Image 1 (cartoon, rainbow, N blue to C red):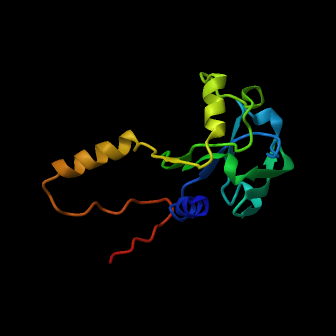
Image 2 (image 1 turned 180 degrees about the vertical axis):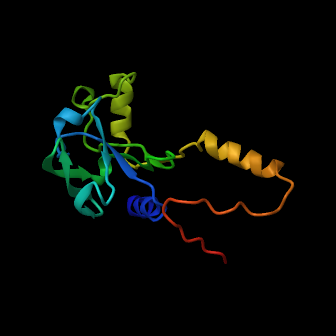
Image 3 (image 1 turned 30 degrees about the vertical axis):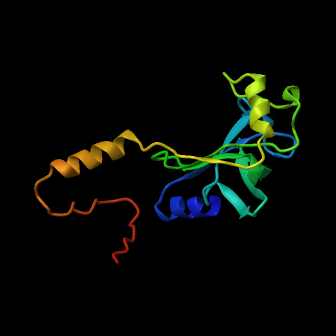
Length: 165
C-alpha cells in the first residue's frame, strides 16, 4: 500500500509525506522528532536512493544542509499522504512484544494504559482518512451546475494524463 500511495502522489504531481513513530529501530535525526513521531518528505527531489522494502524504508535526505541516512521500519509508519490535499492512508501502529507500558512512548493526550493496549494487539488495522473540505465543495458546485460542459483545462502546472475506459 505504501508504494501504491507513493506512486499515486508522484503521478499526480503531489508531494508524498510519511509520518512515522520513532523507536530504537528508527534511524532519523532526533532533533526533528516531536511527541515520538516524525514527518518526512519522501518526494523524489527530497530523497536520494529511496527504497521501500516490505519491512523497511530507507533513503538519504538533507536536514539543514547535511545528508543523513534515514531508516524507518514499515511497522512504524503512521501515515502516508499528499502534502497538498492531505489525501492518503493512515495506519494504526502496533508493536508486538512490548507489553510494558513504561517502555511504550505515548502520544500527547494518550495515557499509558491505552498505549499498552495498542501495543498488545497483533494485527495492524487501517483507518479511513476523511475527505478535505475542498473536495466536498467541488462536489456541491458540480451538482449545482446545470450545464453539462466539462471544466476547461487549467493553465500552467504539471500536465496530467486521464484514462478514459
